[in-house]
Length: 312
Image (cartoon, rainbow, N blue to C red; front, side, top):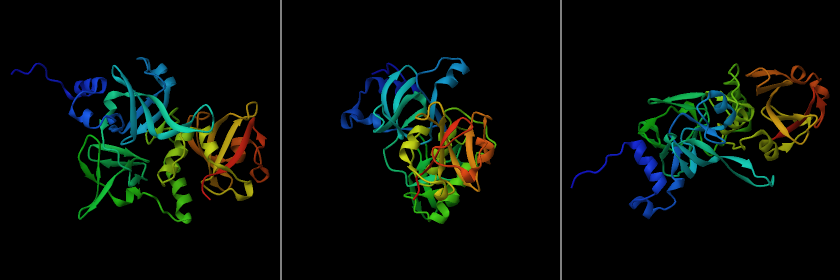
C-alpha cells in the first residue's frame, strides 16, 4: 500500500482533537482531560483574539503555566477552548468555585497523564533544559541516585536543584511560611504590571497573590474578588505579614477590584496599573491615611479597604 498522507505533529494534533478517532480514544474516551501546557506560559483569552495587539491585550483573562492541567472543551481552527483545572473562579451564584474557562493556542498543549504535582517551583525562574520554568510551576518529581528528576509534558525527564522548589504537600513551619510568601512576591518588585499576568514574565494584582501563595503550597482562586471570598476577615491588630489587603471603589463597595499583600511595618506589596509596576509602599502613601488608625471596612483615598487572612 502507498501512504495517502503524512501529517506533521501540529496537523495530527488538530485532526485528533477534532475527530477523536483511534485506539487510544476507544480505550480512554476522556482523553480531553489528559492535557497540559507545554510552553513556559500560555495566554488564556476570553475569546480568540484578532491580529491586533490592542485587541489581544484586552481579551487576556489569565496565563497558564507550564505543566498546568487543562480540560479541552472544543477546537476552533488553531484555538482550543478549555477549562483551567488549576485556576478557579466563583460562578454567578457567588458560592460555587469552578475552573476558569477560556481560549488558548492549540499548539500550547501536549498530552500528559494526570498526576498530582509533588513539588512547586519557588524561585522566580528555573532553567530546565531548553525551557525556563516560572515560580509556581508544579511538577511530579522522582527521587533517584542522581537527585530529583521531573517528567515534563512533551519532553524528557530533567534534573532540578532542591533549592529551587518546595515539596508538596508543603509542611513549612509558620516561621518560614509567611517570609517565604513575601520573598516570592518581592521577586517581582520593579517589574511591569501586566493585565491578566500570572507568570514570572508578567503579573497583575491577583496573579501576584496567587503565585506567591502557590509557591508555598497554598492554592487561592485566580481573581481578587474570589480571593476575597476565600479569605477571612482579620482586625488590624491581628494582621500579620503575608496577610491580604483588599480594596473596592467607595462608590461600589461590593465589587472588590484590587488585592495587595501586607508586608509588615505598615507597608504593602502590590502589582498596580496606577504606576504600571509592582511596588512596595506604605499604607499611608497608598491610601493617604494613618495605618495605625486603619479599620476594617474604612474608606480612604476613595477606596473601601478590607483586611483578610488565609493563614491561621
